[in-house]
Image: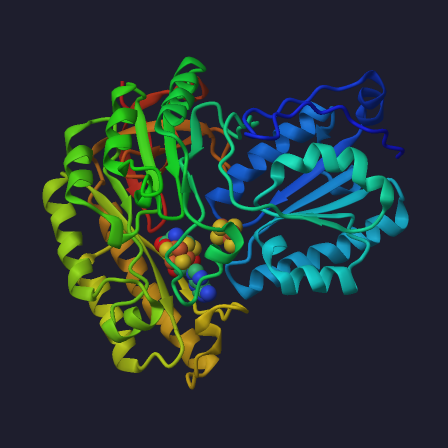
Length: 467
Ligand code: SAH
Ligand code: SF4
Ligand code: F3S
């Protein structure tokens, strides 16, 4: 496809509001063109994809779920673990095939991997059919690059310094629940983690801009917002604000449900606990990654807390926030993790009885300190530990779900159930997934309704509408 230049009016100096103005000849170029977008990774990336979608559609492209008919293929990548890279490389094989068979297709790689120098090098050397790599810092340049740079048919890498951009438009996946970035980046430098390298330093958005975004979402009919940050509760440190104050201001907007992820134990304050217990519209659900139960491992991970400090915080939250559910992340097989270290992790799981946990085998990420640590533990042993841990974790999430059997809960209904379209699905205030039956059930989509739980499994609940 021939791509003429695009007239984009951008207030580049402050990068507030990205205006896109299409000249008539550009409209023609993208009319009847389709894009295919796939997203890997965390909520940050899912939300970034909502931004990417907004740009592509404002250019005039239409989404397709069939990759074979796409003219622009965008893969939003994640770099958190090694198998993520394998997935992308596999996907690129498919792209190469498509590109060979019809010329009219552009391949764009976005997301965290594009901030990893070794990945960029790999793509340039071995997968040079890729048209564009765009990092996490400059998604805003996508419309411009799509229309001007592609003509040159060579890989261009764009990555700019850290900055906070306001006025971003999103094509949100849901009409009822919305992600809101309140800060970008991470300064924690846990020794295993790639995120500080792919997302840059911690930087917060202005409180009034966030509140304005919430107010606009309320006007559009949104019932729920989830405040996003790699360490969401480190919000404000760079601009003299506090996360607890922001949370309170968001609660006062009157939006029906507020969530926030991910909280770092090190930044969890008593003021936060006070605000959460004071406002009914702040959901009693906290994702609080522990990573390991061994102090030796926590220290080598640079997590900045001990097992005892974590447990103290955990019990304080449980005591002060009625009905709270707490989930966590755990890594097994950190370099030289001993059987005793691992058993301490199991002990913590038994003490906390988490409502749920995401568990991972340590994956060395190039450029991080942990990737250079000596590791004598075999992969076979790590897999065994993961299996053992999962058994325990599932036991407790099942136990926590069983407690809801025959109880009435409030659910925000988000859409039709994936497996059974005679049902709808939604989440309880404690973030448990419920599949719901009832008369005229589709009419409940977008509403907060009372549901009686009829069955409880490890990963979901079944329920019926309460009249
Ligand atoms: N900012 C959040 C989570 C970021 S990534 C936090 O600090 O809790 C999500 C999870 O992926 C982490 O909590 C961790 O459990 C896991 N993870 C991150 N890097 C990893 C690695 N190199 N190997 C295995 N798991 C990892
Ligand atoms: Fe990674 Fe640690 Fe930052 Fe979380 S807090 S994103 S695990 S460096
Ligand atoms: Fe992955 Fe980047 Fe998120 S590495 S987990 S997409 S911040």
